[in-house]
Length: 269
Ligand SMILES: Nc1ncnc2c1ncn2[C@@H]1O[C@H](COP(=O)(O)OP(=O)(O)OP(=O)(O)O)[C@@H](O)[C@H]1O
Ligand SMILES: Cc1ncc(CO)c(N)n1
Image (cartoon, rainbow, N blue to C red; front, side, top):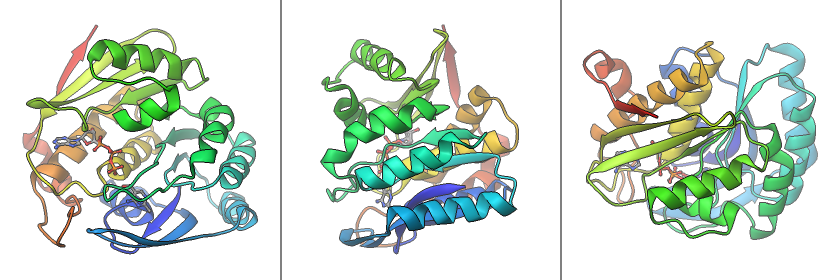
């Protein structure tokens, strides 16, 4: 299940999630928190649904279908976060929280007053949180420029009650795009891939977290799911579709076409 916003341009949000689920052979269900009028150039409008209607969508799906894993993306408001948290608290599922805050074009996909609810209500339910660096900065109140600071921020995030955190390195510079993964039990690994010099990165975070969710739903361990999701997003970024006039979407087909001949580098410690 994905609980997220709709992207009319098809590259991020609910649409990216369902495409990823489909490519990975899992049946996707969707709970829409907000509609966005959006294309690769930016977000032009946001029309949120009501918290009650978000709850109704979740409950109706759970009453009928055996949901194995859930991801959250754009949640928009404190009341939607409270409702999603209260509803999911009762469910026995693995939960991937992508703390979506700001779209590539700068639009606010999470109201600033919603950060407290995210931290206090949703994060304690999360199997894994997948912040990019600016999102990790907002959640922790720290500025993050080095691996040392990434580790300190991860510790702060783990203390909020999440079981694990993937600190995504897409927003840092360097020849490699490295994601650092920390677990509550103190274990750690990092996944490294070549940084692609591209503007075709609309929906990378949504696609990555949707792939983790799909692999968890199929019964992979969290570590396997994160590593395989990194392959999915790397291939999706490396082989862009080149559509749209702004930040184009990633290529959800690439993983199935090329996964056999591709590995990412994993560092353990
Ligand atoms: N230029 C790049 N080359 C290779 N990998 C990248 C690149 N940019 C991001 N990634 C990878 O893509 C995944 C998503 O990370 P990113 O930091 O882009 O998420 P995000 O900012 O949350 O995305 P979104 O714009 O959807 O919110 C991570 O695994 C990251 O390492
Ligand atoms: C609906 C939606 N969710 C997430 C993002 C972040 O990529 C976006 N641009 N739009």
